[in-house]
Image 1 (spheres, rainbow, N blue to C red):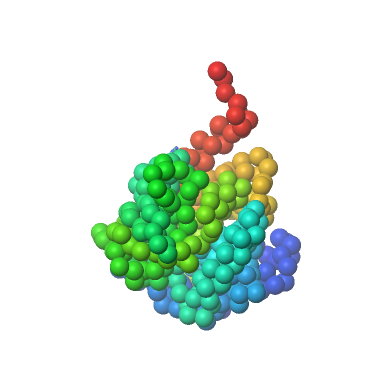
Image 2 (image 1 turned 90 degrees about the vertical axis):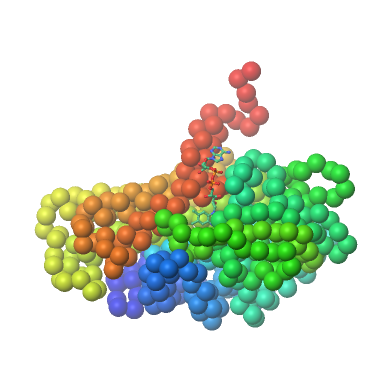
Length: 419
Ligand SMILES: Cc1cc2nc3c(=O)[nH]c(=O)nc-3n(C[C@H](O)[C@H](O)[C@H](O)COP(=O)(O)OP(=O)(O)OC[C@H]3O[C@@H](n4cnc5c(N)ncnc54)[C@H](O)[C@@H]3O)c2cc1C
């Protein structure tokens, strides 16, 4: 399929990548929505660092807010791979919306298909069913938007220590206290899906007691503070969230006690969900370059620059890097499952690292290849370049942490030491 004014060619052609018709339809819907709705609004939100809440309102009507809500609850029932491919398509048109959408969708993906894969007692499963029914109804019927603020500025978001944000058990729920930095969707989300440490009595803080809680934005004791004026992903509006004795009812648990820890251990690909946005940005930088050099970019004079051998070589190098990135990433998101083998986990780290680093490398090359006029703010490339720089920094799988883990886990089996 080739690009038309209403649609672009899919990043992953359904026949070549053996996608089911239903998957292809959902992913195609996301792509057309991205081109039609997200792209025209992206520049202004980037310039003003404002959150594109109207995109989320429109996503409700498209069924995209509920893409991973299981079908029995009224959602589209997308699995991990389908979600990732749809998110990559959105990332081509507005990185900030795709990244924020990821935060929202994870509240349903993790409590939905992922939780279904995890062992739970019958009582926990029944409680989880009852609670998630309420969350999903909010999203499906009311268009509620969920954020996912985990980061605290310390070692917890990297997964090495317990979260400093604490949920103290009280009658009927929890009193939550703490601070979350980089809370994308801050001030716009209806619920903040936070990770915190459950504390009862005098027991020590432990990662095993991580609790995944939906804190209603309107709760007493919930505040958004600080400014937001970053290099890239400006539309995510990731300000600081303060929780001061915020009472959260037990019914707001997005996973039963102890299940988040099981998910993080048994379903490591859950941390790969930041990568689709950046996969989309890599494709966007390449597509821009081809259109620009062919003199086909809307709003630009039809000047062709494709006849210079240096341009052709640069495009070839970009294409090779893009194909390598897509192939590895597609494999990693396709084999995501509970209890993956060591090879699959190493491949997931490698895919995350590759996407995050290559998205920015391709965008950098796009600017050098297209030239000065291409980096004006009237065109999307300079935004793609800035947005693509952010991916490697995102915990828990920053580019550095991926390198760290690949090296260690390739050389040491679990429990092995040199002592
Ligand atoms: C645009 C944007 C949106 C974001 N949105 C969200 C959001 O919605 N929710 C959310 O929870 N977070 C969000 N984040 C935060 C992000 O996931 C990281 O937590 C944040 O970028 C970390 O910044 P820091 O300076 O505190 O990192 P630090 O913790 O100071 O780490 C700095 C670097 O040191 C390295 N490092 C850290 N720990 C280790 C370790 N244990 N081993 C080896 N190396 C390590 C990493 O490479 C890291 O990049 C967002 C970030 C960005 C840029």
